[in-house]
Amino acid sequence: MHIVLFEPQIPPNTGNIARTCAATGTVLHLVQPLGFKIDDSSLRRAGLDYWHMVDTRMHDHLQEVIDEAEHAGSNMYFFTKFAECHYVDVTYQSDDYLVFGKETTGLPAFVHEAHASSCLRLPMGQAMRSLNLSNTVAIALYEALRQLQFPGLT
Image (cartoon, rainbow, N blue to C red; front, side, top):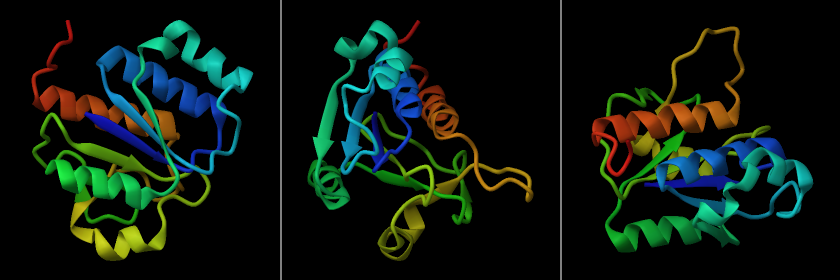
């Protein structure tokens, strides 16, 4: 599996997501610009001592990741509160890319236009603007892994 963070802004969120990626053997893609330096102490603290276990890949643009996934023949799912389809309504494959937007503004407009059929959402109450990014990533990733019967995990 691949987790893609588009322009993440909050170091502890990214650190928590990196820890989840380490625990699941998931590749972490970070699309720049980041809202922090990769050596930020709160990022490192949230990821604890697991950074060496994470396959982290940096990208200058989201299109680079989209091209990579298309070239590999992988599915891409874009998580947004504006999607029609729920995250449990698809059948995940082991090489899928799960893409998440930045904490303040989400994914760029072109994603909603060009990839509307691949957009997914987590249901939540109407009063909520959004869920925490690291929680959203964990929920979505573990649903995908559940469907795949938690490959390589005990």
